[in-house]
Amino acid sequence: MEAFHGFLSYLDSILGGAWWFPYVLLGTGLFFTVYLKFPQVRYFKHAWKVVIGKYDKSDSPGDTTHFQALTTALSGTVGTGNIGGVAFALFLGGPAALFWMWATAFFGMTTKFVEVTLSHKYRDKTPDGTMAGGPMYYMDKRLNMKWLAVAFAVATVISSFGTGNLPQSNSIATSVEATFGFEPIVVGSVLGILLALVILGGITRIAAVTSKIVPLMALIYLVGAFAVIFANIENIGPAFVSIFSDVFTGSAATGGFLGATIAYAFNKGVNRGLFSNEAGQGSAPIAHAAAKTDEPVSEGMVSILEPFIDTIIICTITGLVILSSGVWKEKHLNTFDRSDMYILAGDYVESDADDRKTLYNYINNLGDHGVSQFTGDIQVVDGKAVNKGFTIFNARSFADNVVFTFGQPEDNYSGTLKVVDGNLVKQNIAVSGESLIHSASLTALAFTKGFFGESGKYIVSIGLLLFAFSTAIAWSYYGDRAMTYLFGPRSVMPYRVIYVAGFVWAAVSDTTLVWTLSAVAIVVMTLPNLFGIFLLRKEMKESVAEYWDRFNKENK
Figure 1 (tube, rainbow, N blue to C red):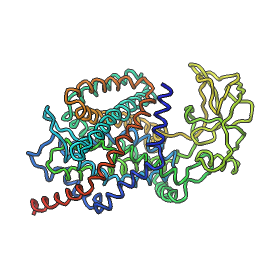
Figure 2: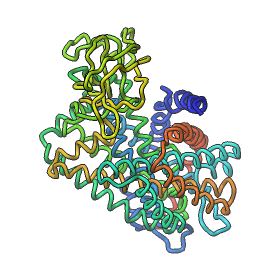
Figure 3: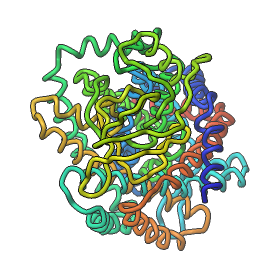
Figure 4: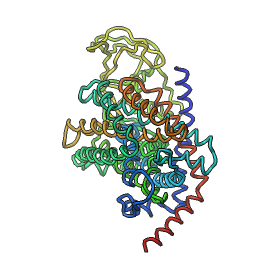
């Protein structure tokens, strides 16, 4: 199993983690933006009119309204990434990461427009009377690349578990247990039943639920966010200044915050942008293919709004909450995750500018920094290390007031701890102290810096629950349409049963392996989709021109 996990990590590093992947994403969006003459700007107003049903026809084929298709797709993209993912991007890439998320969203609006239009154009009506669409259909029916369509569909099924199901359930259970004290198995079971009641009803029930839950969860989250922003309104200007200044200078290596290089901010911002709005991944077109319209281009225009709402609005607000509150570059008491903690050889001092510069080069992999991992023994008395020769580094920062504990309830540890290549050998030792924090914990802390005070963290917990649950709903539909393409409508019910079972199981299980598998599957979805829409670029331009010809004639 370890060998398989290592192989998946290697694939992820050469695919999704590769230096060229962000350039492919942005490059595709940039190309279509220029090629189609900035449709995300020219058609933005028209898209809103389509969403509210101004041009609807009662006899149009499909299963959902434009608004329901949009909210279903948004329920898949507005998830834990909008809460914890933005915080993680800012933590890794600094304020500039938010700028690159905007860039990904702006150009992603065009990418969404293209992929949704083409997928809707080549959708199929299944034997059970429902619509089925997505990139696998245009790959098969238009490009005659059955093998590519099958690869995309298989990757979609895998991603439905790795992106929309297991991590979402695990995030909900962890958050609810930490905030409200409910056992993960109870949370997973209750939400599993609710999930089953929704998805077993098919796209009609899914669309009905998401059309109500998406606006509700956005409203709750935005109220909490603006309570922080208005409480720290004097910091909003400096926050925007830091976003744009860091694009050209990189985050400064000062204090406990060692910052990131320009290239690192770009990479993390663009990748986070993709995982947030899924532009180019090919998932949202599956939801939009169910929309009631005989005009694929009009549905493509509806999808332009997705990256705008998901990233430019919601992710930006999350970013401003974190930046304006100041918690992103402050140290906080926390229990260190082993994946964030490194024990380095040597006695580095935070107040020493040379030491800060050395570790800045180390964490950003710049030049010959000379830093190595510590191997040896740490002598601990009543939870405190008493010998020297090492420095504990956690979450890209110097760790202060470190305490070693063990057992339940926790007691201070005394004895010798063996360290090999920077890692503690004993796994039952908990390490806590003051350091930077990231992900959902950082966002939750930022939400306590507003008018609601400590109660603000409950908004994040409720937001995580609703965001993650709605993501699980949407991705169940993506997976069942992929199963329909691969094996026919009869495969859908077994898939849904396994999907619900997986959701319950993940509440109490380690989903690391599946998450890594999904990261690879996302790339297997994205690259073929980008390749396919590029091959059909001329047809896309012709489809847009034909749409406007018909529209202008019908609306004289």
